[in-house]
Length: 94
Image (cartoon, rainbow, N blue to C red):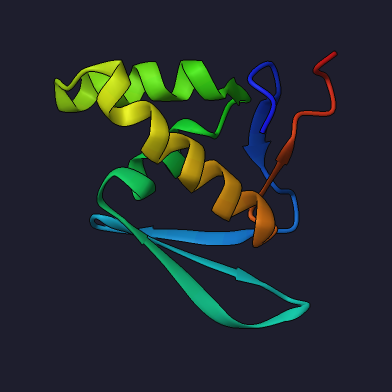
């Protein structure tokens, strides 16, 4: 994953927030993925395009933990969300 990439929710992702969970679905795919806890918050924060570092910073602040602690988990989450087609690179990024 390139650090300068900005990620956003995929336009193809259908979602619904229910309490502390986010349900994700697509018309071209069977099944639903469920995000909980910090992953659900990350989804909400990705309403606007963000770099990996910006997302990690916001999550670290929300949970009062250090960047070195949260950064690897954010990278893993973004890689997983991108592989599943839930997020994409921001078309406006250079």
